[in-house]
Length: 155
Image (tube, rainbow, N blue to C red; front, side, top):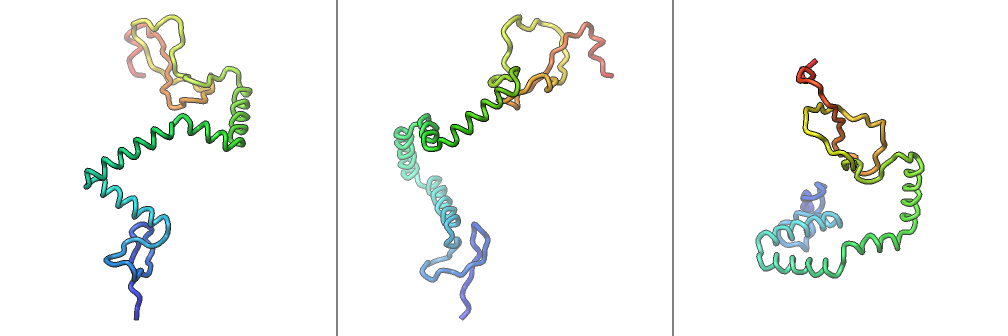
């Protein structure tokens, strides 16, 4: 007798059907495939069952109240001292490499005279002037005062 086979919905492998499972089997017995099956079931249950959704939300709310987010990093650092020492060493090396380096909020406006109203040209900022460690995706430009409208004309 030829064993009945099916293709797993998660991993796509062709596997032998489990005779103890009634109905159509769609997932194999591997742990990641079973987790995918459970996740799919839960998403469908949350969409279709209002009372289940409310119980689930209440459960998550209780869990978040008991497990404060700020305590997670503290506990992680307590349990992983090698992470703490490696991070401190990296930060020290970053600070030693260049004293002109700003660590946080490199795109914040500097205190002093505010920008006056007028006509300005936006030019690419020279990245070689300063290293950035945090917030590297900030838009950096150099404002140059234009003396006349003719300066706006394209080259």
